[in-house]
Length: 131
Image (cartoon, rainbow, N blue to C red; front, side, top):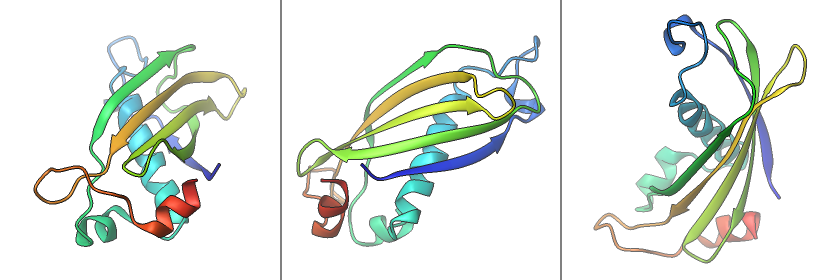
């Protein structure tokens, strides 16, 4: 399964009054990791959309395990796989670099759609990489 690791450092603006990362920021980091994974395989979102394919999220899940806090350095690990010719799943793990504690894990499911919003097949090269 293709995978990548993205590094993020928790910014003050990403935390709540208690200094804990606000839950929705994990989904932003999932997107960072997903884009980095695709880029590492030679396919950027810009290129994908230029080819007439978009990958909207149709399902998202995150399980929070240990709080991440301001200035923590995190690894966001991402893996991707095909579910069908038009659907992909990405799984994520957010790990604190300092102690290797898993802060959160999650998944997103995406459907490939054309510019009119209708489902379409992913390009062959992507289906091969993620098969």
